[in-house]
Image (cartoon, rainbow, N blue to C red):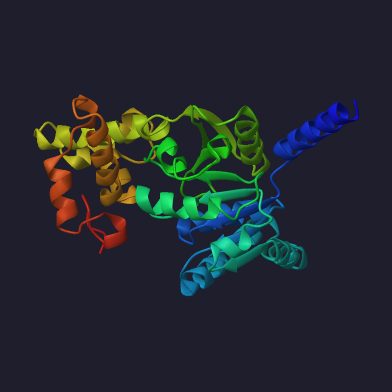
Length: 309
């Protein structure tokens, strides 16, 4: 009876740990997306460690977060400068930085990756952290295009692995796609949903399918706009105007492609074509491939479908 009671207590304790709220977050990747997630998490009272291999990127990220918070203060604390300064100090106190991921995951509840869209690199990262992170720690990827199942395969915690796809700019965009694989436990999925809500976001539940929900609809739409232009059925300017005024979209497809990055769009399409080569929605574009080959990625390079210099 004592053994049985002990096992029940252990089981209840384990369940409580699994269902505990995510408080400590380790974010891998100090770029725009990682820094944005770090800002939102710190603002909502989470303890955040932002990790990158480059110290200068981390310093730039921390400075960027503080700058973003100052813009928030101008709006929310316009007549209360002391309260605004206190707000910034409180949020920044929740953020620390590190160049050594393995050394900081020992007490984390969630490891969230926002690094380069390269499957092998992501697998290598999670495979290494799987060996040192606590058993209760949930792993999640912010990938927009790679299968969560494939990323998770490098770890032994398939039940504690999911996707959290944020949208850029993170402090402004309300949506988070929460992705579960066939192996993701309900406890894990519920924790990721609860964490998204705790950040003040609106989560939607997604299956581990190419592009999840938003990109699965958005990328083929943008690609069809390119094909329409390639066929000579409309100029890029007219297509953009038509979708803004006719459909009420804030950006036309070519403006959006330049904002997202033509290299990013091509990378997503290339991955989809490889997995589903016969799908007409996932066929490549010669025009897009040519622009990317010429280094014209959109706003970030000064030229894409439009010029920005």
